[in-house]
Picture (tube, rainbow, N blue to C red):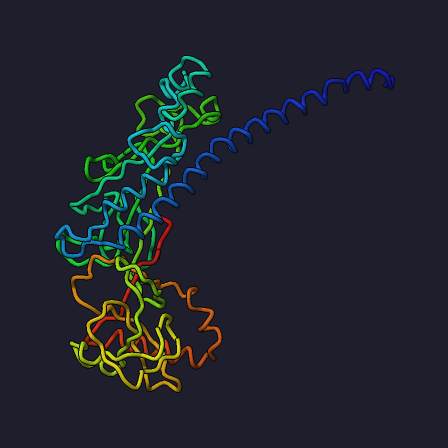
Length: 389
């Protein structure tokens, strides 16, 4: 075969390769853009519910008397996470939980109009209208599908998944008036398939994350009467967080009378375990005890006169007397004070890391014994225990 004829036969092959590469790159760009928005929205939503769950638990109303109810605080905080001027009545800012489904107009399948269809300049000027900002509902009836739910966290549950009907194996929803120790907060971006996502005073939500590039052909078209189409309904995104009460390992000192403070008093483990009323057994300590495992010693003189604050429970039978937990002392009139305690072990690991393994084991065993046999309860504080659905 003539050499020049062979070369002429190969011309145009590189053009075909470039065309196929462009098609692949366009698909990758579409996937990156659409699901980049999905991941960003999910991250923002998870941050919001994590914070709100802790805030709700902080003042959880356990006896349904509308005193100390943290639902209002949690709702306000959740709204403010997505509003940079802290004014939910005005939506002129562009901070939100992702693109609102109202950005993409049309029939959801073939015709697509961005914004109100008056042009890109109008879309840019009114971009705050197309940002989703949550309007969390208080769910005072405490229904399982609500935005905020009080109940009990089941730590040893076999599954920690949240199903489409919002049932969970690791969370028991409390009945009205029943004591609750855990608080669940959720956000959702769905097409509301079961009618549980947008119920006034119970649950809130928005349409799924709308596709932009994908609507131009990345996903297949489904019949208009289909129950779900990703091109029409967007991508479902949900975020759930649960905060639970765990035994406090650290408390802080403050002079603010609106906040609980650690005070230089304590009670022996033996009295704390055996006596329901320990008010006459609280004694001064030589220093303020603020950490689990901290060395503790009672003062040789002095008395307790009803001071309000956190006192240490001290195990004097250990090789060196140490604090094994804390107790809230003082009159009931101090119930409006804000908590000032933590259940996070990292807050005390600096001191615990200096102990030997056997010393740490003795501390854990002593605390566990109090938790199971004591006439009183060690102080507890909120901590996130589950932040993924």
